[in-house]
Image 1: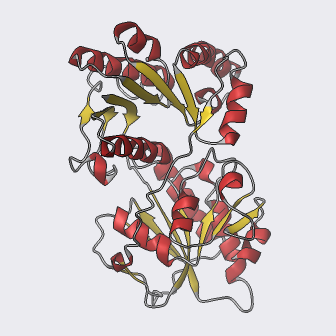
Image 2: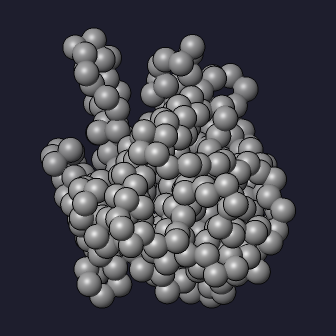
Image 3: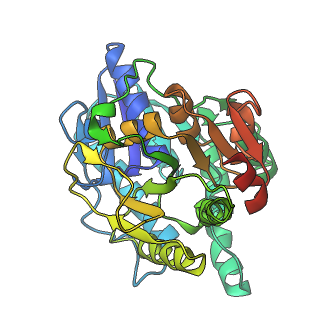
Length: 367
């Protein structure tokens, strides 16, 4: 019996890994339960809402996600401990606990349960927060110490790439356990769901990310603007699709910033919102739209976009792993990615795609 503990079952790469790992173990005959503090039926993977997995939403009744937009890490740790307590009180005799993102609850689980604990480190949390002020650095100190102590307590530590393994070693020099690399996966039973999309021959370049600033989607817009500025500009559009949660201020702000960037570069844009009527007609708009934003697309549409795109423009720098390039290559679509982080381990430059620095001219040449 295996239990997974994950804070928010959204539609990001971490959630995809948890869902795939749970499905893989379940398909092997193991009994699996997924504990989470939050799940939005309109913003999660299909397997997390259709009953395929035993998802138990707990630990969301005492501590909020933040306090007035602040103290997110404190709230996240307390919510995870609350979630772990609900697992302990269920009195299910789990053999293994798989926990990711935060490690605060590991000692509590080990003290109260006989189960072995596997911690999956997508990236050290201490490196994901900004520390622009002295006050913020002082505030983070106890949480960084807790992260180091509790991460090292896990029976087994896994990371998502050699890149993350190297960063882990630098971040936690006192942890003796050497993390093992376990790459995130994509299903090899893939079958492109092209029926969800009607392109009528339209060529398009695809950017597929959550709407977050760190994803650097603006690079794709700047490169595409240079492409459209050429004398022999191809008749193509840039499709920017990805997870967008109206509850998340950064998602809303990032979308607005990208839309303004389109205006700065004289690119006409339009935005599509769920629910989507499939098949979606993606023909050259009469109004001459250059960029199409698609918010929170369903799985069939995502698969169709990956299969039909001329190129995937994967913009994040130093991405910890990056599952989207694998999904694109599985659909026989070329990948253009930054030459840093996880894509260095997954994309073969000049073979399965292109690795380039974060330079709009270099990206425009590939496009």
